[in-house]
Image (cartoon, rainbow, N blue to C red):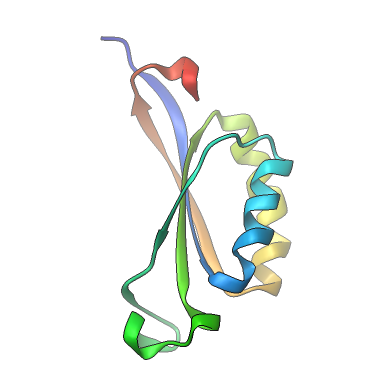
Length: 102
């Protein structure tokens, strides 16, 4: 089966800023994504678990696979976004089947 190379973007953001990030994705032409809860982790502030945080600082993980062009647009807009709001975004190449869907 043929595989197509696409970009997978992973963003981690605090819950209050999730809608802003999703709006940014949509502004860049991203049509699909999945949001999951961040259960625990470690960062600049040290280790954390979901039980340790308030709803206002709960983390969400946004996953999306897309063509390189919208991924580049997301990164351009994400730089000032993450300069203002806590979180991170990163990407890597992935191989997908049914590449026409992305």
